[in-house]
Length: 303
Length: 239
Image 1: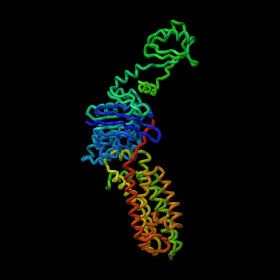
Image 2 (image 1 turned 45 degrees about the horizontal axis):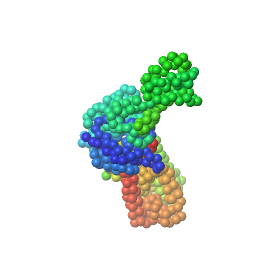
Image 3 (image 1 turned 30 degrees about the vertical axis):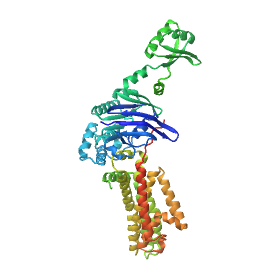
Image 4 (image 1 turned 45 degrees about the vertical axis):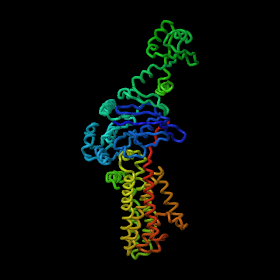
């Protein structure tokens, strides 16, 4: 049972702050690190893995610092995002070499166990250079797991996987988490995190925007105001009709059309067709304007 | 200190890349040149000193050491695969020492051994051949330590190495005497000259100085490289 402890951790590169004053604990089970690209997720994972020194604050595994402490690798496995492995080795040679570097008592047995676990037995004797993206990802996971670590860190583990491989990887991580390991993976895709982890840490622009139970954060995300831009034959009349509805937060007449802010995505989408028909208004364009992940995360920060 | 798994991966990575062909080219030129000169000057003369000493120690040895020494660890750092090695409890000193040992052994194989072969082909130069071989082996060791260090200090290790070999050793050390104390080629020549004294080798340093400086530079280089590798960082994704 291992806990990763962040206490006021910041990391900057020159004038750029990549991670800003983060305090959190990550315990056993599967935790998703969610955030848009450039949010600081990789920086967080690299600091936990001992490949970056925090500029400020302390980061420890059960009290042991991770920076300049190679002993942590007895308890920790890392699956980096970068797809670089020793491509001239076969999958089995790569995993076996990793087992030997960990000085395991029976490296052959450990390698076979983990190759089976990641369903790489059939391809184990092929060179890694011939592997698909998904197979490379799995062989990296196998190497990271060969010493049976308590903590597994995965940087964007689902990138490039096809749906079947994705499901398999999710099952594997869920199983490892249920065994009591601390699994932390990063992703910028909400659905991946939703399917796999009960606990999430949401990062935005280097800050911890939300932390805790996924369902609570998901509710916060879906109940946020949504903004639509509409083009109609009579913007002013439609604005008047919408103002009277309780799901309408604000209506604005702009040069590009009518901008509507609503608190209930579903009700608005359902009602807009009815209202325009009843008012005899022609609706030529209906566009959600803030559905990007950045705007979702931005909302979480503001709240 | 020596890790066989790291050594095996390093040797395969170094010899498996296409540029491994490059290692054999200067060695082949040296041996080919010696064969041609021996055929055209069977009585001998000063040419073995110039070919084996000048070409061998100014071009063959440093360039071979540069390509191999900067590649054994620098290649993995450049492509990111070094993370798989460093995310294990293997001590960083063990990683550096093993990489250095592989680089020194391969450099000796592709530079010192050809020196010995060429020396034995040259007429009446057995002692010189042995002296140059020992000097080249020492040179392989020191160059490897320095170039492994360069590869953990900078991503432009090859450019740094070329500048060092061409400007510092090739130019400055021949005109400014003091520069020689930081010239690995002169350590190697100093040792070769102590075994087979020969004025044409233009050795600028004595045996004791060469040996002491070779040990200091090697040990210092490996220590510094270890410290740098202990602080190896992966850049993240600045927001």
